[in-house]
Length: 129
Image (tube, rainbow, N blue to C red; front, side):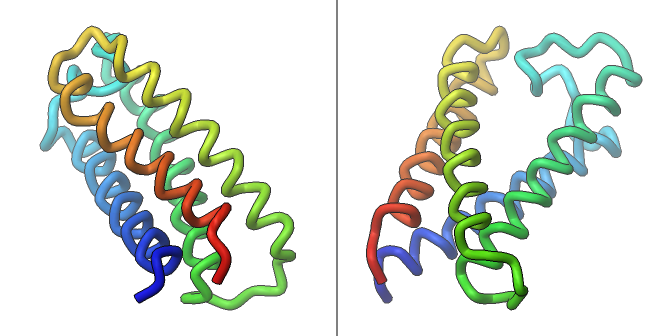
């Protein structure tokens, strides 16, 4: 399998798992103290911030499904590529944010995940084929 296709499939898996993770936070299976740098203080804060996370993950997943050709749409490839560049920038910034998280679990687990996601996005964006 080509490197670009492998990167796309890995990203689809990572964003699907991230979406599941954030849904588990919303349903309080996972404590919200381990997300958003440990700064969430109330359920209301959690619902607001986790809603953002879920929307971003759904959008990202949709873009990756379009890019990989798993779903077809008349959406222009230039829009999909632009969205991928935005996703790369978000993952790069999120990696830096996770490095400075007040929560050790977030720093240890999510820093490498966002870094890998950023690298995989670059592979998808820069690799031919």
